[in-house]
Length: 297
Image (cartoon, rainbow, N blue to C red; front, side, top):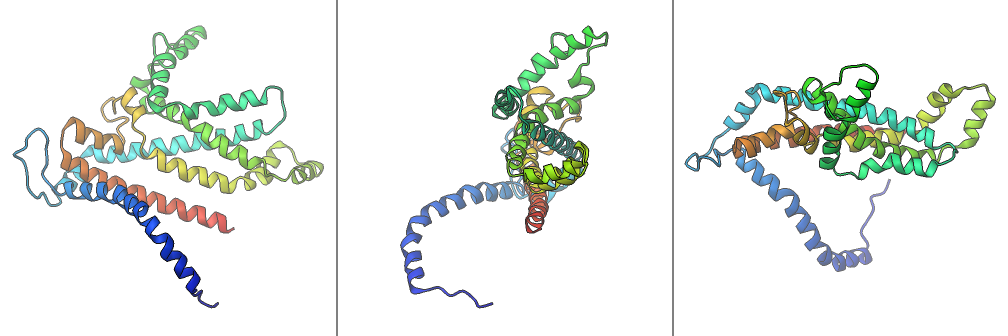
């Protein structure tokens, strides 16, 4: 295979476009690397907003204090539980809704709109709606239905805080999975489905051997994009549980907030931010390789 060469015409085109691209590229680099460089710098400093006299180089003490804190391991575990549970719920319901709304029925357009609508609700608003209108143990809709059926209402954010947060976040992200997978369903070969039916395949067999293989790549992309965003979930936890009870819903993102804006320990919070960036990049690298492997198939 011959190595491509740069022609004089191509070089002239680059010389003409490079001055126009330089400001944009430079701005993007500043936008990305300056905050990261400052976070890395502060992570090695003694910097507490409550006591300006505490200054100087801290070395690895901020990282050591954070890694030895019991709250750090709990936050990592809670992060994995939250991301894993929401991914399972959104992928399962996304496939179910995509298959359902791909069928012809009366009011399908309105049903599609209602399913996709929660994705456009702001996280803070969604958390307030679920906390005060649906999950309130006294006046919430769930409490009313529980009393109507003869059950005792559940105080979700006291007894099952992580489950409550998972339901809110999943409600926000099921529309995204549905939209991507429903779009992918439009390219499904209908003749393949009809042939499977003629061969005696039932609904579960068609789903397993025809629909799911067709949706494998979109499912991987949905999983990658959702994981990247779910690692930064904050508003839903802040509005509903504030990381509690105890550390029951404290994720790494919320732990960084506690270090920075509650304890005013900028150095410790910066160390947590650096660790969060490292973990997010490890996850992103794994997911990108998975997506690339599926695309090459």
